Length: 57
Image 1 (cartoon, rainbow, N blue to C red):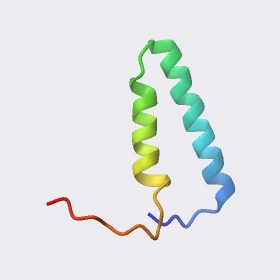
Image 2 (image 1 turned 45 degrees about the horizontal axis):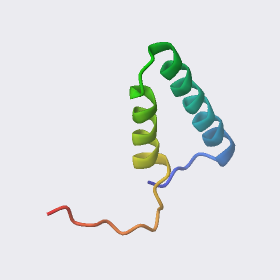
Image 3 (image 1 turned 135 degrees about the vertical axis):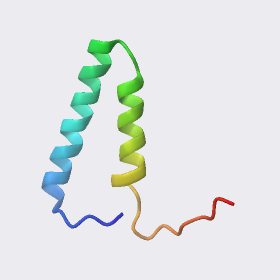
Image 4 (image 1 turned 120 degrees about the horizontal axis):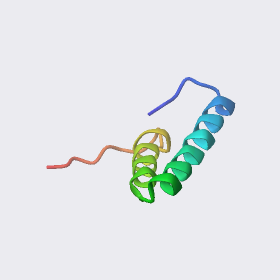
């Protein structure tokens, strides 16, 4: 995924999301928020624009 936004707002979003996930982890006493955070970040923001798609079938 290529993102048209400049890096500073993306970094701020990433940090805010991480801190929110940690806060929810502590409040809810569950690892679900952290798992959701990592799943979304790894599948959307931290994807290399040059990565080839691998067929799933």
